[in-house]
Length: 111
Length: 113
Image (cartoon, rainbow over the protein chains, first blue to last red):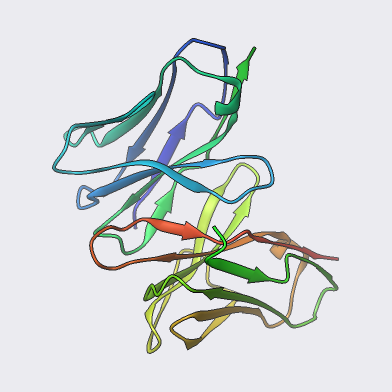
């Protein structure tokens, strides 16, 4: 099966700085890569996703990049704000069937 | 997302008891999933179902069973609960129409003593 590794497990940044979270996957057939944000005590919610036919996708302050050759993808958050503090999960899937999640990154934005 | 609901939200039980966690959705999605979340381990897939007659094991199905009673309902059972099944359980749905987005329920916190 697929194996998704996520780093770092914890990340602290100053407000206004950028944050980068990286994931690698093992199955070259995976073609859908979502990112979820989970606030304390809440459910995971999709914040951005990317498919294998695209190298980069942006949505305001967040962006995701995908390198299919190296089998890794990254989440970039610019101009971080305290409300960005949460746990972030990456995942990989083949055509939306099974989803394999990374172990999560706890992001703390220090005001 | 109020379209995916889970009951109960919290449950404390004893070793050896049978437990059922229920998930209902009004999103009209065919695909439903059960995950467990443990600190430091992320979300791990227990079972998934693509329609009422299609049930599949995930990464960690041992000790669990499921029932898809209708398109909108997907239940997870622990036949004989054990302490290492203490975790946060999430149900999720997705639309097979190519969008792939998963929508999660609010979670059930299960403690097995």
